[in-house]
Structure formats: C-alpha cells, structure tokens
Length: 115
Length: 114
Image (cartoon, rainbow over all chains, first blue to last red; front, side, top):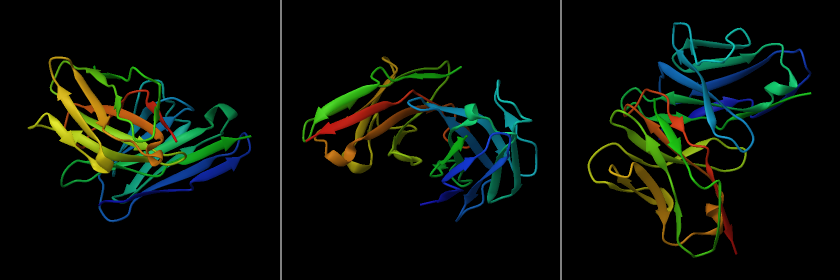
C-alpha cells in the first residue's frame, strides 16, 4: 500500500523558536495533502489543505501566519510552527491523497512539545 | 455540514468477548464512511470503509461494520477481541470517496482486559 512518512516523529523546542515538520509520500505523488492536529484525548481537527504549487487552504480559526504550510513538490509538504508557544504542543498528523483512487493515507504523526 | 458522533469515549471489554463501537453521522448529502485505528503515538490505520454497495463491510483484523442509512449509523463490531486490539478507534465521514478531508468523531478508547 501507499506510504506516507512524517519527520520528525518527536520534537522538543523552546518557546519562541520555529519548528518544521515534513510529510512525504514515499511511493506516490500527492497533489493534495491534509494537515491535522490532535489534542490529548481529542479527535483530529483539520488544520489546512495543502495543494502542490499553490497556497494552502486553512480552516477557520487556524492562524495561517503561525502555521506555515508549503507544498513545493508532489511528494513533500511541510508544516512550520513559527514562534512556538507551549499551547502549540500537540500531535500533528498529515495525510496524502492517492491520485488514482483518492484514498487517504496517514503519516505516523509528529509530537511537538514546546517548553 | 457533516458531523460524526461516537457515543462512547471508552469501552472496556474482556478478551475474547464481542465488542461494538458506535458511530452516528449527520449529513445532508450522500456520505462515505470510514473507521480508523490509532495505536499510541502513531498515525491512523484504515480498518474499513463504506463507499457503496453492500451495507456490511469487512475490514482488517476481523472487524466489520454495517452502514444503516435510516439510522445514520456505521457501528464497528468484532466477535472476539484480543489484547492487541487495545487502541483508539475513530469513525470518519467524507462527502466524496477520496481527495477530500475527513471529518472525524472524537474517538473511542477500546481497552481489552485479560
């Protein structure tokens, strides 16, 4: 099956710094990727839709200047949390759409801890 | 707008007993339904999906779900659970069969007791 990989799986950073999370489709090209955020004991909340070669579409309430999304190639989307604060600590999960079927495949997730 | 309700936040069950995890959805249009499993600190793995056709869908690991349009439900079942089934289970809905984001329920924590 299709594989989506995220890196890093865990990251700890100081408050005020920026952190980049990568989402790669390893064996297929994905024109569309989605970024989710998962709070402890909560569901996954869609943050944004990342489209290759164009600007991301953010969900209501998500700060686009804080959560920068770049989808520069058909196999890579990045999420950069800028000027991170402790409240940004969360589990971030990406998913990529397999073009032939539209089925979504999820990455392993990235746990961000901001001290 | 679509929404998904998972009525039980936690379900404890003894090993080898049957289990049902409930999921109800609301949507004004036709929907596609999914169940995912999440193990600790991992991403989501697709268990099964309903796109069309037979309302009884069989998935991996012995799970199955039945789409009931009149009751707007898509409950997940397994006749005999194992310790390894302990995980978080998410029901999700989409307006299209693919290439669109999923709307997730809040999840149900299945705990299998030896």
